[in-house]
Length: 366
Ligand code: DP6
Image (cartoon, rainbow, N blue to C red):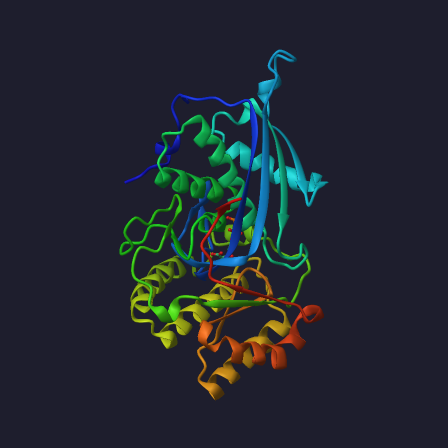
């Protein structure tokens, strides 16, 4: 089995003074949710997600070797500038600093360079869509491109596994944004190659019914979340239902393996909606307890159920750690579902805003 120490490099064979890379990495939407973690960003249960296509972070990483003659202690700390859409962004810096500290053991060259990280999202900044998954994945890809220059012999497999491992240390769900289209993160007895350390492409067959899935993200509430994911994960320690929940995630993923093979959309919908509501049930039964859904989240869920009952169109919802609703459906019903969204759901969205996305293939070097 692969262990984290396998990603600690020995001596590099090559060197580079300066240069830059640019990668885009997408967001992802979990079907079986990651909620609860152990030390070092090890998930309490395995999760699986669809990689998205349109909601992306694009990050350019410029690097220049520090001039060691100017100061003796110049290599003692990380040195980086952070730009968001071309403007200096001081408030993102502590998160990046912490990320660099966590990954330094895997990339021992980090203190040798000054970095300029220039990042932008394709989705509106205040949309309430978490940019940490796409953002951390894009940064991890760039750092791996640099490491590949220092060690050109590395395999593609190592490159992508390590990129995902680094992304995980930035934000757990980010490790599922490196690859597409269906990504599993976390050890699962019946998924070969699955690992707590990094995300892997779902190795089994995916039925045509579950390919080209669409995800329309209804922006219900764009405000700052009252409780961050990090705090929410933490509340799974000593949570009265935690152990049962973690076991259930294994069971649900097990069921999804057969569902991906059979393409049974009714069964798919049951698992996906139950996972979304279970995630929020965990929040409501934490101590302290909290609710991230808004009245319009519930209005939308009920409208989807009513529409599905009436039309038999296989459309369902999922939620992440917020009030927004992801509407999931196969491509061949897209026209009807989009009409339904425009007629009946847009009124529940803040400023009528929603984002049309679909399954995608993962990070791309630009
Ligand atoms: C509800 O990956 O944002 O979206 O590891 O603390 O950065 P950290 O948490 P994060 O948690 C995501 C939780 C979720 C479910 C999921 O994406 O699986």
